[in-house]
Image (tube, rainbow over all chains, first blue to last red; front, top):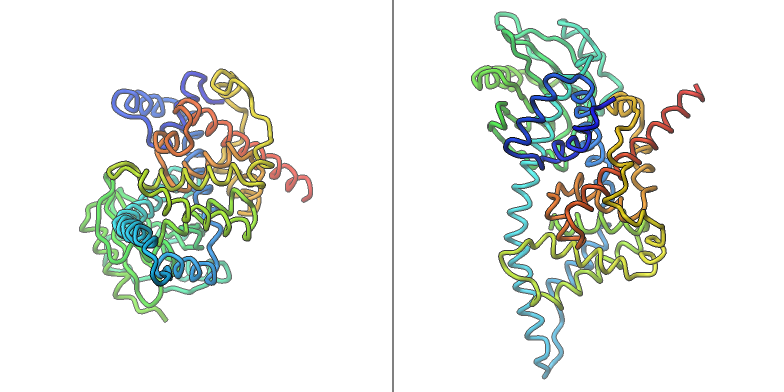
Length: 249
Length: 167
């Protein structure tokens, strides 16, 4: 049972609507209250799930084409000037769209990054971050067979400081994905592998920091690789390089 | 045109039909073009065009029928929103459920709750943006959102219990 006093803050916190002292107080409370932190993690999961389930409907190709024709090429009637303001309006709207497309693209890319960071945090904070627990890549890899629409290979970690802890199946941007957890010193690193489609493609080749996490993402032979951790950025890069140099069979 | 996709997606969630969603998006664009003069540069374009979409929906036949559902009169004063719900942790629930259950839970919400939930979680709008889009105070955004999420959680819990019982 959550605390009555904080119950109404949970949604606001999950939606990023708490700031300053209010947010600090809420975080302090979370550190000392298992029920509220469990509820908060649950709400974060639910928000992510609703976001994923919400992107369900896509316009048909025919409808998209029909609308594009309607917006891009209005047919003016001869000897009539009534269409001029319409064309000007369309041009302004298209300009607004172009600016907005850039803004939206960037905002969507940031959303995907935040979603992956949330996934990394909530997964590690959960009671069982991995469903297959093994340091043996020959155990972990076959576990995913039949669960994912793709195959992948794991790098040889001999001679490195990384250890494989295990893996589980997750969904990112509605794509089924393998989430692999590695350890390096006292840090955990998540590596997320999925097909490079839809929202994930927006990440392109990325090296960035979000909150205190380092993230590196790239596409290779149709697969999207994303490495994220609170370890040093060099460690994230080293593990990313190990994956890059492991040819996919 | 990512905004086109977002508008269509919300239209489909609101109308629950491909044909009605296409009509709604088409009418929204027509109104946006016609009323572009009323858009003030520097203000939120996304909130503006989403507002046109939902206002168009509300005055459509489907919209009028869908919003006939009664909501509590004094939404902000309804204390039930402040009461912590006895719950199984959502994370455990979600693990057990299929995406379809979540889809049904969202689709089953009354339109005023559904639109707030989708704008907050799917479009990741801030409370202020949602308030601007729908034309309601921020307090109402928060109480509707809280109720929507609570209803989704309760529906999911119900469907988990059913799944458990059928096993």
